Amino acid sequence: MLLLDTHTFIWLCMNRELLPSKLLQLMNDESDGLFISSITATEIGLLVNKGKVSIPRSCEEFLHENLSCFGIHEVPVDVEIALASTQLPPIHRDPFDRIIIATAQSHGMTILTKDRTIPTYPKTKVVWE
Figure 1 (tube, rainbow, N blue to C red):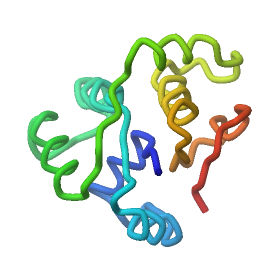
Figure 2 (figure 1 turned 45 degrees about the vertical axis):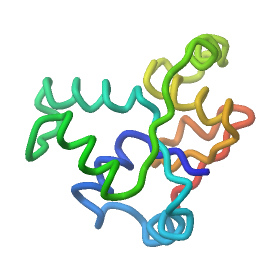
Figure 3 (figure 1 turned 90 degrees about the vertical axis):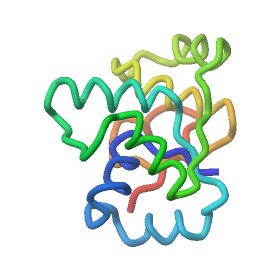
Figure 4 (figure 1 turned 60 degrees about the horizontal axis):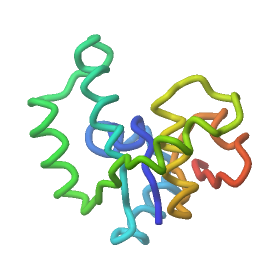
């Protein structure tokens, strides 16, 4: 099971050439096991509002169309994941990444991310290149 970090999801949808070919192959091989955390919707919405990301339609349409197109499943942020994110070592201060890490740990997922801090967490598997 593969959990896409927010930038990985955005790049898959809009700038696939930014993703390593190894990652694209892995996603193709695991097409039934692709996931995002529901926190990704919040992060994308905030990035769009700040002008850091430009998407061709509303966030809701962008998310629903691409989740469907790529067969990506959403993992909700439940109480256990939210609390687990607060118990992680204080390595990363980004609350979105902490929830993504807690989600991956809770469900035994591998995170697809370019972020170099996320792999420093114990019990966290990351693939990029």
